Image 1 (cartoon, rainbow, N blue to C red):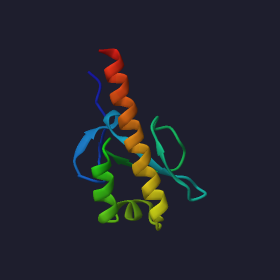
Image 2 (cartoon, rainbow, N blue to C red):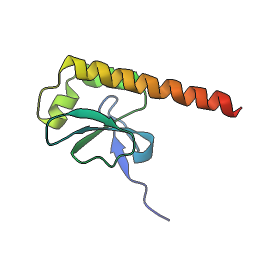
Image 3 (cartoon, helix red, strand yellow):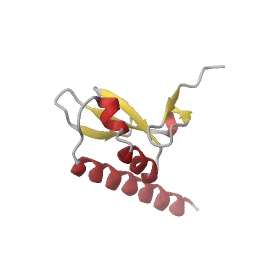
Image 4 (cartoon, one colour):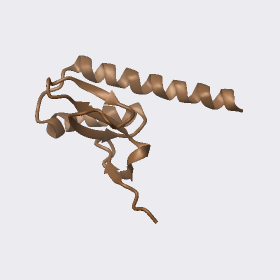
Length: 98
């Protein structure tokens, strides 16, 4: 039996299996983006697959602490939009499969 890697969501601060979370990555150039595959190079932090956790992390400035650098509001807005878009896409795929 293999050990399942666990990671903590920076929004709700709960532990989940790594595959259930979305990785947020800061590249060496300082660009922050979502990493759905979990393979992008750079410093990573994990968040649940809902926008509410990202909003909690934003309010508590947890990503700034994790990345040791300030994050612009435009980046947060783009991340929230990407999470909501991914959630909508997943719902559409679920409806198409039924």
